[in-house]
Length: 300
Image 1 (cartoon, rainbow, N blue to C red):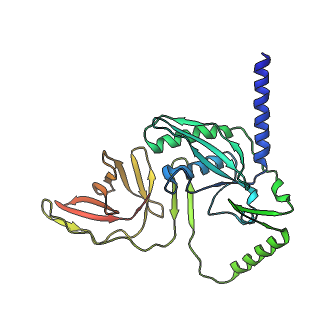
Image 2: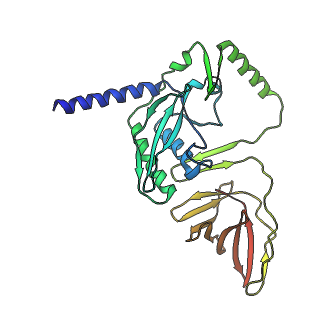
Image 3: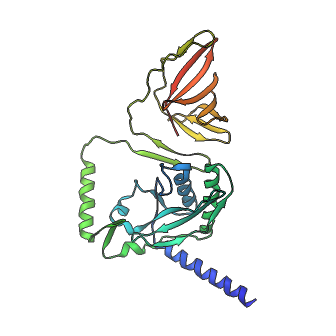
């Protein structure tokens, strides 16, 4: 009985210590690309972690969208780093919170999933790791805003600004912001438990090319010249994806097939298939016994 009480008191003490540590930080910074992966937001890990931390009461920001005070005082936030300890047979994750001096201030429990599909497995393992933050009742203490020196740290590049200098820089940037300049489009992110994706409003050059004529199938092959110019954004569903435009409106439903990058496709009036060819997504369907190819601009 004494052993059980001792273990319980030790756990409560550790949880209280972790709570006090995290209360010292105003922000949790979520990288859009974790070191464990090759691609940005691979398996939707970044949007999922940001969504889960926000749901637990933390103020979360992406690493390329830092608020003004965090830019000049890097120690206001901790970076959420995804530690991937996966093996051939299971997916294992730990979430570490790292401060401006590259010290780990908190490590979550290890989340484990036996799922074979990577996206499902990481989703399950990350959610289990995030259980470590349940019941913390996080409340920012404002401790790091009282430091005499403001520290800006990006890994090995550390600079210090005294408060007066930092204030002058902030005021100068505000004056620059008031000047009439050409506005640059920004990246707007949306993360919910059902739909997690990036919505990039930055104007981009069209990558739509004229479709090549293939050998006619049945009657003839007709290339739809009114190719879609706007970007359709892919949102994951239970059977595949739904494609929405910027309004947002569902324009097409994609259902998984047994072949990679080949989907069964359905719109309000058409049924066909969507596949990737030479880096371009193509919607192929029949219209009055005529095979039609239509190029799509899809962003996953």
